[in-house]
Length: 471
Image (cartoon, rainbow, N blue to C red):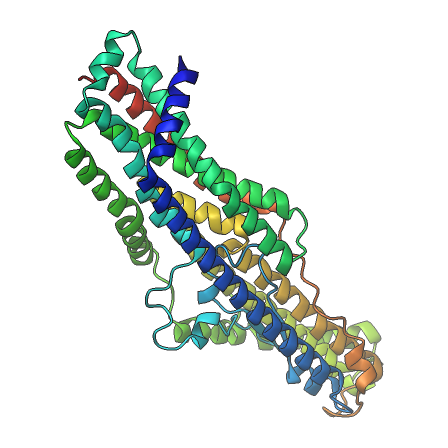
C-alpha cells in the first residue's frame, strides 16, 4: 500500500510544474551564490599565500641583528582555508584570519575578510548555506502542507478512507515522496559542493565531510516536511495551514537566531578590549591571583643562578643571564596570557552553550551550528587555530632566547652577540593541521541531538495528526 501511495504522490509532484519551476529557480540561485563564493575564496586564498610568502621572506632576510630584536620584528601566521568555507563561512568573515606573533604578548586574530567589503558589504549578503537553511524550508513546508490539505479540499480523503487506506499510510507515503524529491533535488547541490571544495582544497576525508553535511541537511528537511504535513492535516484549510507555517518559519529562521544571540550576549557579556588588556598588564606586574609578582620571581631566579654556579656575581655566570632572565619573564607572561585568554574563551563557550539550548526552540539554530562545525568554520575551529599559533609563538621565542643564552656569558649588555639570516631561517615555518572530521562531529554533537529531537517531536505531531485527520 505504501509503495502505491508513494508512486502516486511522486507522479503528482512531477506533473505539478509550479513546484518544478520553483525548485529549479532556487537551485540556480544556489549555484550562482556558490560559484561566487568559490571565486571569493580563491581570491582570499591567493592573497593569504602571497602575504604569507612575503612576510616569511622578510623574516628570513632580516640581516644581522640581536636575536631579541629579530623576535620583535615579528611574523604573521595565517589561518588556512576551511574545507567548505565557500558553502558555509560560519564565523570566519567576522573574526581575524591572521595573527601577529611577537615576544612577551599574545595577540588577537586580526584582518577579518568582511572588513574589506565596504560599507554595504553586509546588506543583502546571503551565503549558500543560508539559502538552504532559510529559504528552501519555505518551499518544503509549502509543498508538504498542501499535500495534506488538498486531499480534504478535493474530497479525495473521504474516498481513500472508504477504500480502507489508513491515514498513517497515506501521510507516510506522502512524506516518503516529498523526501525523495528533496533528496533528488539535492544530489546536484552536494555534487557541485564536493567538486568545488576539491578544486580549492585537498582536505583529507572531504567526501565523508560533504556526505555528513548532506545527511544533516536532509535530517533538517525531514523535520520540516513532517511538520508541514502535520500542520496541513490538523488545519481546517490551506489558508490556516499556510499562515501557521509562515509564522513558524519566521520564528525558526528570522526571530530565534537573533533573539538567542541577544540573550547570550546579555547573559554572558564579554570584557571590553581596554579592560582585557589592562587586566593582563596588571597581572603581569603584580602576579596572578595567589601567585608571586614578576619582580619576586626574577629575584628568586637570579639567586638560584648564583647558587647553581657557585659564583658571587651574575657577570660570572657562564651563560647569558639577560636571555635566561628574559625566558623567565616570558614564561610568566605566557601564564598570564593563558589565564586571561582561557577565561575569555570560557565566556565564548558559555555563549555557545546558551545558543545550543536555544536550538531546542528552533531546528534552524541547531542546523546552523552543525553546518558551521562540519564545514570547519565554527568558533571551536577558530580557537583550535589560535591555540596552535600561540604554541608556535612560544616555540619561536624560546628558540631565539636559547640561542642568546648559548652565545653570551654573564650579565652582558643587551646587544653583545648578533644573529644573521641563518638564525632566522632556522626557525621552521608555521605548519597548521586543521581539526579532523571527528573533532567537528564531537563539537556538533549537542546540536545534532537537538536536531534529532526535533525530528522525533515532528514525527509525534504527525502521528497525532494522522489520528485526527478527518474529511
